[in-house]
Image (cartoon, rainbow, N blue to C red; front, side, top):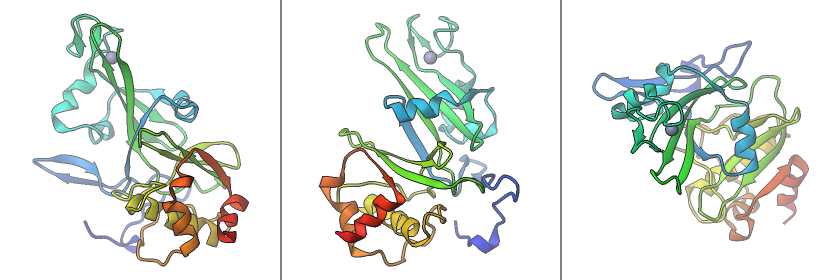
Length: 243
Ligand SMILES: [Zn+2]
């Protein structure tokens, strides 16, 4: 899909964060055209903090964009904890259900995918949603949080000056990373450069990946020694340029 920012008015002047554009084909269904998809497990305190503000709601059209077409009907099946005879139940105590939520702060759809073995010795919840394209108009950048797990899945968050947690704004297909030589750390370096250059004012997802990034910021993002959990305020980020 090709578009430029000037082609689409994606921002509601009052809300700022209403900017969903879907890409749809009759035989494939609809997916997000711009917002990056995010998958997070409720394992870290930050993920739990985010989860605790979600509101459970009935499935709607936006939730169907977060699952494959073959799984859409499963959005309507009860969890084994609510109905042990549900089509999502396995052997009366296992479960492969989906639950549907939304984030009332950023108004983003969220899907919870339950996996529970019949014995119950393995039980996980994985949450799929979209990253916002920017913070809301009155949100101010407070800190960048890298929630690192050695398993390789790292969550990237922003804490606003009001204490609100947001996924790092991200466009489809970019993906952030740290501690290796690849596109993920390159995207993170670009975002950090944008934050520093704008004094934390420009928090929008990067949509021009060709811009030059300072070598010191790239080195920081690619260095394995920085692949750890850390919370970085604007002065912390500026210190990268002192290295
Ligand atoms: Zn379930």
